[in-house]
Image 1 (cartoon, one colour):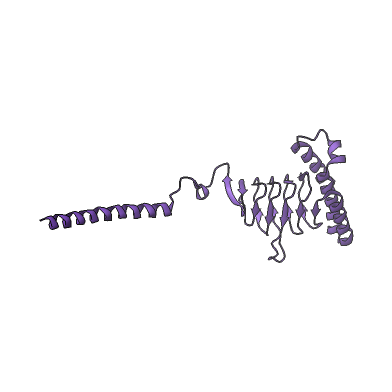
Image 2 (cartoon, rainbow, N blue to C red):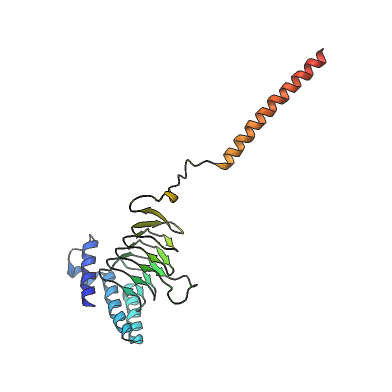
Length: 220
């Protein structure tokens, strides 16, 4: 537990450019306080001291604004930036060196039994306000954009954006299936209107020809 806390302290110091030194992080950072409380609560939970685990978790929520179920498994080097409004569910599993920003939720959909919450790989970043909901995996080195709603598996080395989230980049490259030009794609309605206009012009020419022939016959 203490090795993990040292890694958490180092992660906050390295990833937050506003952090001046370790002492400042240790005394004043609510995100670091939240993970400290969780490490203790999880220790109680693993030793079947469920009441103490839940009490510690609730005190953590009261003092830091971060709600982490004591059963959640979180690897070393975890950093919660700002912290307020973060929610992490019971069956969540988080790998090493992950970062979560304020307002993010690692939760369930209410439709699953048993494993109900997501699994994050190593070096995953979850942006502010993002919602990752369900028992699927977010692969190593992936990023979830701010306010994205993720409802399905995210491959490693990917960036997921939108509601519902889609993979916008993988290994720094836009996936071919999602490389859709929303500006220059053909407009099917415009194409149909164009075809109708061409047909109308042809019919007008034919009608003019018929009228011309009828006028010539009347003159004769």
